[in-house]
Length: 48
Image (cartoon, rainbow, N blue to C red):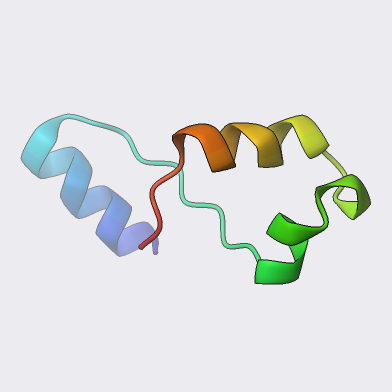
């Protein structure tokens, strides 16, 4: 993922911070260490 993030940075100037998550972490956000982050990912995240 770091390679893709670097390519995006070089092509667009946008720094992407990839965060791999299992689907059950997204579905059971209260079990995740940072539920607010999961909420933000659902709201603003892009699935690749």
